[in-house]
Image (cartoon, rainbow, N blue to C red; front, top):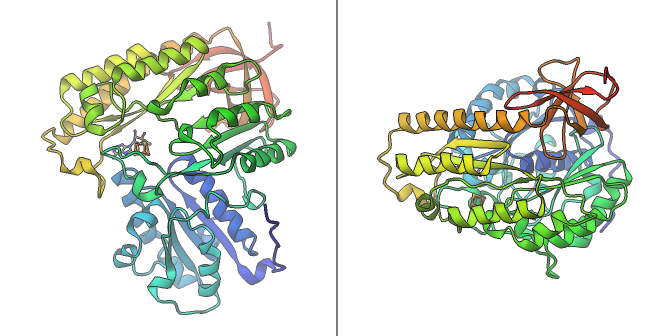
Amino acid sequence: MAKIERKPLSEASRGRYHIETWGCQINVHDSEKLAGALESEGYSRAAGAEDADVVLLHTCSIREKAAEKVFGELGRLRPLKDRRGRFVLGVTGCVAQQEGAAIFERAPYVDLVVGTRATTSVPAIVARLRGGAVLEREARVDTDLRRDSLEFPPERIRRSGLGAAKAYVTIIEGCNHRCTYCIVPTTRGREICRDLDDVLREVVDLAGRGVVEIEFLGQTVNAYRDERGRTLADLLRSASRVESLRRIRFTTSHPAQMTSEIMDAMAEPGSKVCPYLHLPVQSGSSRVLRAMRRGYDRDLYLRKVADLRSRMPHVELGTDVIVGFPTESERDFEETLSLLDEVGYASCYSFAYSPRPGTAALGLDDPIPLAEKHERLARLQGRQKGIQERIHARWIGSTVEVLVEGASKRDASEWTGRTPEHRVVNFAGVSAPGRLESVRIVGSTAFSLRAEPLGVDA
Ligand code: 5AD
Ligand code: SF4
């Protein structure tokens, strides 16, 4: 990989930036790349928007609510433009990709709009604006779907999360599916994959710098296949051989592409893949799955789960569910509830269906009232809460390994972290972010486990 030459610019000559990030891990990681792109051009991180010369809203458009929030936030930030000279306000990420120059129609005071794959355009446009250039709108928009974000030089990424212990690594970007509710194929483009050797070099480098957990990212991470035909299974095997690395995760997997080869690579001796899989099901009704164009039915999904569990008996599963997809009947919905019971997910993200521009589901009749969708969502969440309470209670009395993430949000005197099974554990005692601790589980709720350090009153 080409070495990047850092330009000898003083911080003062460039200014400070602030990025607000919405959405999934990929967005979080892309923000780390945006931050790196700006820092390698001499910008430094601001304490917050009020303190910054450049503010970027790194946006998500998966549901309408998330997309609308952006315009509220832009309105809130607008006064900063009058207060600070040559202040730059930009929109990046999925809403930028989806809306492009149309953002200027709704918010004419926005300075730049850069989509999901054009990361390196940001510092260039910002520099021209800060230098006093008056740019036409076309020169302030870049929604080209190229490889900028995926191929961003790893050494320039400004990694933020979890001290130095955990790192995200995007291996595939985009999505070739056409689920009828989903805007992702529009906002992220078609699948492109990184070369496995490049990915592995990054993993080795991160491990050498103390990273113990790697999470491989992609909208359809298990569809990964590089130019030489190497798959996610090959990558999991190679990464498992990186000596000081302790944990490997990958997200998000598409059920139809969850091959036995990948399952073997997860489960075989020597594998460092954590016993947790996020496998979005979306619905338990085969009729609805067909209308969603998911490419599997209930039986196939359950077979995949059984196949994985036969190899990894202690694997925990997580999922995503959409409630109230157009035409979803009460019976369809009950099939989703029964699927939750049957699989026994340790976590579940559930959403009311949200109509998205340009998607095929917009053309479907939708006689179900919104109130009913919300009522179903509440019922589903109640049912799932009971399932999680039972799953978590089983951990009481066992000793688990926690990768400490930081102070607990609820109680700053406690630490919080995750087990290999992705369970959240809170505990008091002496520790530090990034440490791997063995602790004993002494309590549980639907959402987390409570632990004591080993050695406390055995
Ligand atoms: N409405 C509601 N939820 C959606 N998701 C994706 N598109 C929509 C939509 N239009 C959910 C899916 C996906 C998760 C990231 O967001 O469950 O897995
Ligand atoms: Fe959207 Fe379906 Fe692609 Fe997932 S697989 S990103 S839900 S189109």
